[in-house]
Structure formats: structure tokens, C-alpha cells
Length: 205
Length: 292
Image 1 (cartoon, rainbow over the protein chains, first blue to last red):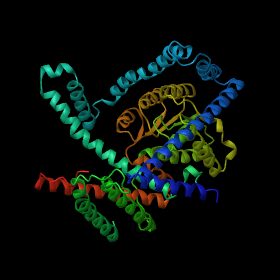
Image 2: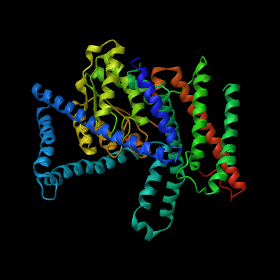
Image 3: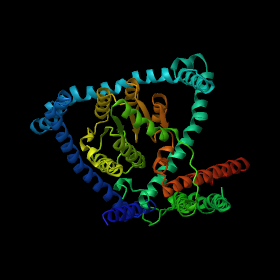
Image 4: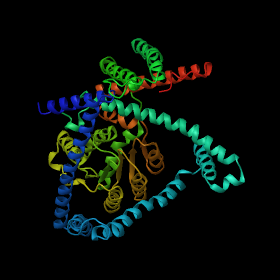
């Protein structure tokens, strides 16, 4: 019984959301918007659960002396940002916005910028001509890289044209084959969940 | 493939292009003015037909193919390596890190597929007494993952080994999450890293960090852009539908395996449809019934 109710809820919700897609009636549109609004509300409340679990976990780790410096910094950041917003507001010139602009945003940009170095190291490993396929990949990558350089357009039309051909035909064909597989996989997974065949999310009951 | 399956495939192969041609094409071409308040939006007719054919194929697979004695699914190296990854971590006495990525929430099929693999990994880590760390960016995913892992430990017969503190929420900020997972990987130096779920720009940051510490990495996602990064940085990558077949492949559940067979039927139908459309448009270049 404990798993039957969630399965029925899942089936009904899944069917309603499936059917509303095929309707342009204002009632169907309103229902879709209503469900989306409810989802936002539920998600906002789950954030409290997440933050509470994070604080609980961090405090326990600090007490045990496990990763103390990292957990302390995380907890201080978690507490200070909302406090600054409550005390000083979020307008221009407020301490909250100053902290966001000068600490949080640069830290996020720093992590994002690591991507450039990781792309370089991954490309170095990936583009080694070990066999025929890897050599084809290497040559294709070189052509695309060269064709994307603005200066190549002044030197020759061939390489930029070849670049677009590689991107529009062989690359696109491979991508579409993968996308069809992903689409079908997503659809059957969704159907399995709606029909109650897939129950891992219900502890497999 | 059995005669009955072939008959059905041929039937669908005829139904799909013909029904699309006979029904959808005139309606779309007519630029129907009344669609704003109708209970049925006629512009969605091709999608409805495709959906019904897909549902029929899945139901057929479950009821007919699922009853067959032998269900063959080709070997998927990435899923076969799950055992190896858990075994390696156990031998080395280190943890396993499993991340569902930043991009998805719980209603996304990729996240559900990743939960299915998590369930299997949790059973194995429970049996081998290996630590499983699961950091997430979404509190709902955290709650579901806790239940899934707990159930895995109960199934394996070691509920006492389950530690809810190892399945935790970090941050809803993309690079905050990526930095935290990188920190966890760098500090705990896990022997195995699972990157299965919906990934965005953080995919390569995490995969390269795992690669740098020499962890065995199994990855899979639904984004073709991030798949390219995973193929370069990880040992095993689940491409396309392989991620969604994991549940049936790992548990050998006949019902779920038969839905994987349904995907094959649908793939064949799409291939037939594309062929018919190509031939049709070659013979009659002004035709566009196949465009929707």
C-alpha cells in the first residue's frame, strides 16, 4: 500500500501532463501554469531541507575535526550572505551586493576559467594519432580549429568551407544518431516511471 | 527476430509514414486558424501520432517480447565496469564518488536513469564495505538518493553500513558545486568516480580532476557536447541510450529489458521513416509531408 499511492499519483500526474501538451484550451494552459507554480513553491521549500541538511552535516564534521577549515568557511559563507541581505538590503552599494560582486562572482569565474586549462589538457590526450580513427579525429579537429580562426577567411576559402562541411554533415549525422538514442531512452524511461515499471525511486518496492 | 515482431514492425513502418502523410500534412498545410481555444491543438497531431506509436511499441515489447525466454542485450562496457570500479576502490581502501551533475532535477529521465545505476552501485559498496560519497546540487535529489542508497544497503544485507552523511546537498550554484566536488575528489582521492546524470560546463572540470588523481571514471549524460568531454577524460562513457538501458542491464529485470527492445523497434521505425522520406523527397522535391 505504501508504494501504491505514489505509483497512482505518478500515473495520474504523468497522464495529465502528457495530455495537456496536446491541448490549446485555456483550462489546459492554466493547469500547466498552475502545476509549474506549485513545482516552484515545492522546490523553494526543499531548499530549506537541503540547507538544514548541509548545516547539520557541516557542524557534525566540525565537531569531529574532519575537514574543519573547509566546513567552517562554507558555514560562514552560508550564514553571512543572507544576514548581509537582511541587514543591509540588496540594493547597489549594499554590503550584500559588494560581497557578491567582489567575492562570490570572482570565485565562480575562477572555477569556470579552469575549464580553459582542462580543455587544453583533455585535447592534448584526445588528439593523439594512435590509430586510423584517432588520426581522422585529429585531422578533422585541426581543420575545424583552423577554419574557425578569423584570419583563415582572408587566406583561403577552402578550409572555412571544409570546416562547415565537417560540422554540418559527418559531425551532425553522429550527433543526431546519439540524440535519437537519447530521445528514445528518455521516452521509454519516462514511460516506465509513469506506468510504474521503474520503481527505483520508490526504494524499488 | 521472430515473425510476429517483424509483422508488427512492418505494420508500424507503414502506419507511421502513411498516417503522418494522410492526416498531418493537410492539417498543417491548411494553416488552421482555430487553435487558441480548442481542446485538441491540431498542430500537435504529428507529435500525438508519434507518441501513440511509441507507447504501442513499449506496451508490445513488455507484453510480447518480455515473455520470451531469451532476451539478448549487447554488452555495455561502461556498465560491465561498475563491478571493476567498486572492486578497485575496495582493494585500494578508498571511497567512491558518485555525482549526478549539476544540470538535472529529479523529474529528468537522465537523473532517474542515474538513480538506477546508483542503486546497483550502493548494493555493491554495501557488500564490499566500501564508502560511497554522493554530493548533489538539489535537495530533492539528495532525499531520493538517500532512500535509494539506503535500500541498496538493506538489499545487500548490511543496513548498518549505510551512512546518510555521505549523501549530501552542497550548493545550487553551478561552479560552487563543481568546486566542492573537485575539492572532495582531490582530498579523498577516490579510486573510482561515477559521473552519471545531467552535466553542463562543470563536466570537464570534474572529469579532469578525477583523471588527474588516477581514478577509474565511468561517465554518461544526455548532452552530446558534454559526452565529447567525457569520452576524452573518462575510462568508460555511456553514450546515448546506454545510460537509460542501465537499469535493465544491471538488474536483468525482464520488463525493463523488454522496454530497451522497444527502443530498438522504434529506432528501426525511424530509420524506415527517414528512408521513405529521403526517397519521396528525391522523387518529388516539392513534397514536404515528412516535415514536422
